Amino acid sequence: MSTVPGVAGPLSTAEVRRHVADLERLVREEYKPRHPPKKRDWRTYEQQLAYRIREVMRDLGPLVHEACVFARTPRPGPLPILTLEQKVTLLLLKILYEQSNRRMAFSLVAFSLLSGLEVSYKTVERLYSDPEVAVALVNLHTLMLRRRGVRRVDATGDGTGFALSITQHYATTATKEREQAKENPTPGSSDGSEGKKIRGFVYSFRLLDLRSWLYVAYGTSRRSEREAYVTALTWLKSQGVEVRSIRLDRYYSRPSDA
Image 1 (cartoon, rainbow, N blue to C red):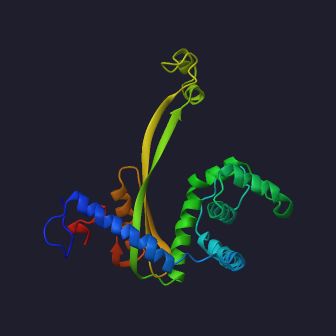
Image 2 (cartoon, rainbow, N blue to C red):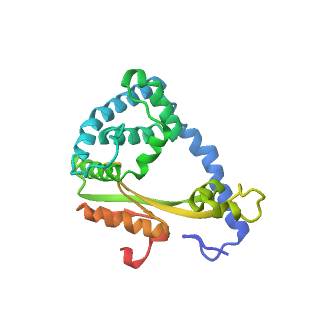
């Protein structure tokens, strides 16, 4: 049983289904014919997309350069193939064009005739764990907030979780434990080639400013989606940005969040 505002008394399941069917009929027979979907003008769309990409690339270089200006401790060993600015730019372009590590490396090989830059996919992969790249990205985000004048935000956001399946392979175990791993292979496998699978989750939360359409904060957690949410708000507060209002789902509706 249920109730509907403006309707006296409870409704039965059959009545609820009938009301829902009436709404679906109104949408199908009256609303959609009056509001047909707009057809995309592909020529205009491509022109606008090309213009936006040119604007982004024009502003990206100076911002990345400024974000990479900070004190760095010289590392031992040979000089890296890429400068810090090239590392940050490469990572941003990879995300912009939604490429995998290997496909991005293959693209660089194709354009090496123009740029003289050729790296392996491992170089691209290591960008995620490079501490200097992480610092530069934080600086870049801070610069973007300041340039866009983000001080008080009316925001919205949502979180999500990613399932991870990690396999401990025999080769990795043998390298780490040497002969002991060879003498004691993984149970359930004749040659030890099939390792133990470990399942885990990584949670993330993004906060969007409704005025500037800019993602103003991002948080991650290995424990819960809510911890990622708290991390995002904590980081935003450290930037001196005030959250004036925020629209979230019921999961975050607690008195302490008001």
